[in-house]
Length: 153
Image (cartoon, rainbow, N blue to C red; front, side):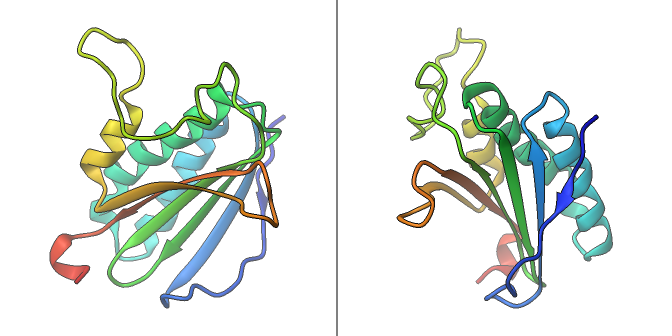
């Protein structure tokens, strides 16, 4: 049985609302994260971002599931009037080095895998990677921001 646990969060520094979801690293995690984000955006005046957000969060959670040994996958969503930022965090080291070497998307035209981050890059206003810092060594954070460009300046 897969269970999603809501986690209390600090207030969003940009205004708006913040939500967190902690998932066990199972094959169902991408679907649960996708449905969670769809529900949030459907009620937060961002219904036009639902499809892109679903695609991007699916890619990031799938990467964490397939390419790390993390026991938990964390999804943090910050929603304000202008934009939506989603961060996916894992605790585990890379399997076969795949997730730990995140950088610019570089899949070749004949490759079957490796296009997920290029897709996120093409849909997002911004995206990036980071670490958990000294407080959470070993954590990897991958994030993206969506919004209408005319509203984000």
